[in-house]
Amino acid sequence: MIDDQEGRFLIRPLEMGDYDRGYLQVLGELTIVGQVSREQFQGFLDHVMKSENLYLVIVDKQDDRIVGAGTLLLEQKIIHSMGKCGHVEDIVVSERVRGRNLGKLLIEALLKHARSMNCYKVILDCAERNVQFYEKCGFTRKEVQMAVYFKDSKC
Amino acid sequence: MIDDQEGRFLIRPLEMGDYDRGYLQVLGELTIVGQVSREQFQGFLDHVMKSENLYLVIVDKQDDRIVGAGTLLLEQKIIHSMGKCGHVEDIVVSERVRGRNLGKLLIEALLKHARSMNCYKVILDCAERNVQFYEKCGFTRKEVQMAVYFKDSKC
Image (cartoon, rainbow over all chains, first blue to last red):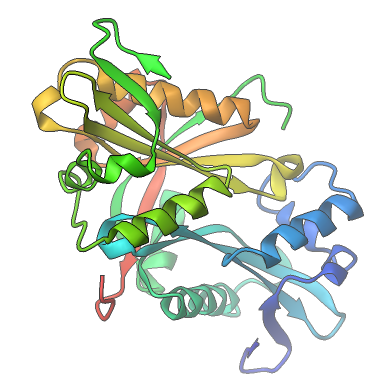
């Protein structure tokens, strides 16, 4: 889908084979992944295929391994003349390939999809230390993210 | 679904008849709604019915009008052992019925649905002035919301 300037990395939609290319390990650099079986992963992909959401991965063509990932969740609204809002989620670039502009290329690919789906806006939540990165990607600081964690959740 | 103490207000899922009960006008107290035809609204509801997302409204039983609304969008993740994240969106309580604890009842109903769907967390973005309200609902301040608006969007 998108090649970096070196031609070493490729950004493309998530596919079944990525289960064996280290997709879950890369997500593990972001947060807790837990146990995800091959069957669960296939079920997830079947679900994704039926949606307008986009799950992208960055592949290192040198060793055919996943080195980054990011999601664009699409929300159909009533407001804004039944407009769509894009939610950027779970952006990660593996530590071993950072500093090569891959994160920016990934965000640009997600934004391109959001435009093509006629989103009126794209939002995301990030840590204070990542604000500058997202500003370079065209985002501006908006509101406050609030969260509730369910302590009794098994996840 | 949920009655307030007075028994005057009812919180229940959005339905087709709410098009004529002032649902769009209440959303208009939140932001720009634009033109939404009856057919578009029906299409939206058909889409909602097939999803796990929950669209709630507050009905004033005195005059059978919608006086509030809120959404819980469910996101299936891979992370957290294929956990689900709930996104609270587009919360509004009509100005004419504020100060009756209806906002808190609405959020509690959305959180109840999130628990029943086994979400590991629920997140939302709000203006600084609303942080205290969401803290009373059990949320805590987390990250920074960033946004891109597409200027060429028709919405």
